Image 1 (cartoon, rainbow, N blue to C red):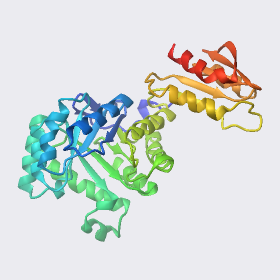
Image 2: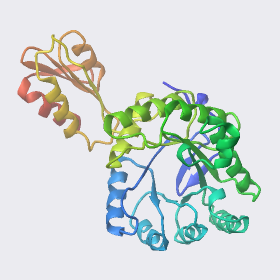
Image 3: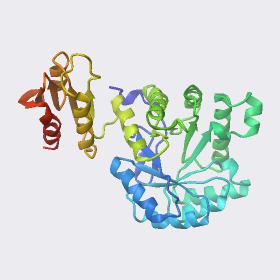
Length: 352
């Protein structure tokens, strides 16, 4: 298990009632893909994300109508709300007055120093943290010219420039992200900045893609950094339903023994020794237990080689034989079952 002492030490800040950094558990974030002006759709999606285990939710604020919706949205959700804003300082002020719990802005792109100062003053008065979000796809030309293109050095320089703007205004409620679609670039940038600042870091592989490919890219990038002790909060960026981002995030944390939520399904890849339809059994078990939020290890194994051992080591498990299987609970065999009974019996045992 990765021990907390290996975590990179950072300052702690609070996003609403959720602690970030300073040894706090790594938090799971996501972002809505609804039109923020559509209050009903946005609230419904946030509540689905919350049910899946999302702890901080971000929404895009592109105009004053979206900013005006924030207070109504916040009144109907149970997790901290972050406003994602670009270019217009007035939207940041409106979001703060609406009671949001965090801002995602880059101080250098919302106007003059006076305008930035107005936002910072309001955020400080409300103790609302600001995330500086550097993205490889939107680096300023000056950084790219100086550092020879989109490089880790250019990304770090951009982050430090924005950090200095806030620090010069005595604002230190800061977290930082350095996202890129290319995993090696993202890794190099985070590693470099982690050696230079002690602010909490928000991890992510941006524009990771769809489904399996996106989840794999995110797991590699985020997982490597977490294994090195870098990172305080994470978002898995996937095209489509953001609930899948939350599930992928917990799968990454669970694989590293950093945090667990819901079932951990252990199932064999199947081979010629398997004598039951393991894919069908495993799929039914996974679907039947997707709403479980307790950290329970469940084994679905297909043969007598590794099956009994894995099933015994799980909280609940089955080990298959020729057309049947044995149900285990806490290391002890409970009953022998026909193949057609395995999935339903295992689901029932977990819920019991």
